[in-house]
Image (cartoon, rainbow, N blue to C red; front, side):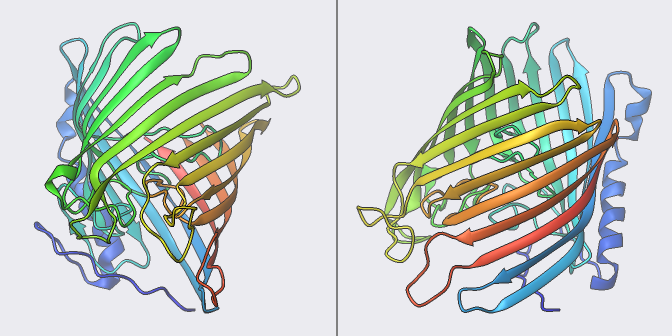
Length: 398
């Protein structure tokens, strides 16, 4: 069976390397050892420890533009362990260690730094902190504030939940947001979100080339949104958001001095309907987004001005409680070559996914997914790249 070529992980300090034959077992032991350090939490009523383990079998087949077929499969897992302390009434301090593991990984790296090993998050074998923040929450659903390293998730609801802009750590990935998140009520069920995110010069979060943060003016990006999740007839979610990344679009390629701001707008809408009288419900929604400034692209996804297409959209539908604990959902979307910030969709791609979920215990579930991703545009004389993949995984919270 052919295996895709891997890029060697970047050197970091501190680093722990194990022989490939013992990497998976060693990395798991490393994470457990790091997570065991707050063992005192059980003796202090202000402290709480929690975590989750997710893992399973993942397989895929890629047909490249020249027709070459590559197969891959592996057993992948993610383990996260957190410790949290509530103090002074409305304040919370929280830290979490996260590690990704695979039967195919080659070494282990334990590090704490401002950037991940890849543009889409940590690599297999990486162990790091994906949360380390101080939070304030006013009573009665008032103002909320987080400062430090935290997770942000704004998905289109569904079993196959996905996002076009912010979705930290989907599936078995590990990503994070470094910065400040202010969440406060506006009125009539609406809440406002303001996130100021610090970007390391090597990049943080999910960003695709030619987004580049080596310019000193690009280190802080902003996310502004208004959201309403109170029921309005069948409508269960309304959300509008803007993302602004100043001086981050390297229009002549990564590392170039020619820079533009990267500005996007995103709108989400979802609705919920009861189906029958046995608790089954249908959840459906749509998300539409647009990037106002995109890089030149003479080969794929070109718009009328010769730049990459900045339009992105997705639709989703899910049936919950078809039988007790059994849910199924479908998601379909298309993302232009100029949309560069989705954690779930690649630029210049059409995606279709069906996902089944069985919650057979309060804290444990099984999921199975079938997905196809196909290039929208490709150079003349080549075929569209095609990726088909499946997984079966278990998730458990403790």
